[in-house]
Image (cartoon, rainbow, N blue to C red; front, side, top):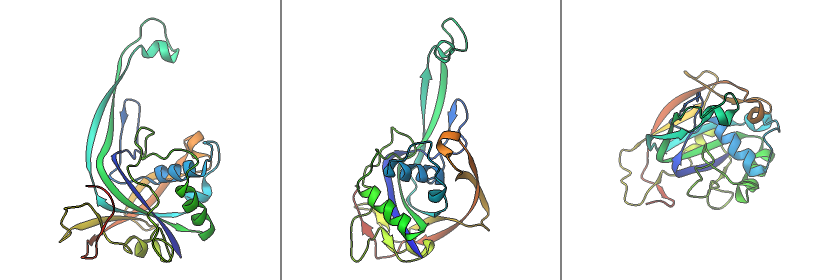
Length: 231
């Protein structure tokens, strides 16, 4: 089995799966729909292209720095006039948009080697700009991990859970690794949690997503840690 590892880090990220009307949520770790969308952008796929092959990849996430949930307030004026659903000045709508501040994730995708190699090449030179859940949230470091012999560390010849533990904690300079417990969320058909973020077909054009199951475990950051960027 082969797993491709990605690093998703930035000052702001948003991984919503239940956004409705004036409230936009975020999960506490990357959604599968968001990661598949990021991969599709790297490949230069249009929104109308089916993403079933990408969606079949098994996904796991190691939460190296959970960040903090913050909420922005946005206003839209003259909503009736802009939407064409009425006349006159309309009303001002306030929307709340949650996001994760200063989070850092290691994401693994396990599946077909050829597809993973194609993704790795695309992430090295993305066709379209990459963003962390929302277009205004670009990554602060390359999503593709730096090269290291023999193949990675981005490409690992190991199952998903093993691959996520194959490199040390992506800690920040000055942080203490002793006793740090990292949360790991793994896609698992027998998992206890249900997330509605599994893309189906041309999901980003049709907004079609189905449930998937995940399980959560915890690991202790070892002495052999990695410092990759950040302060």
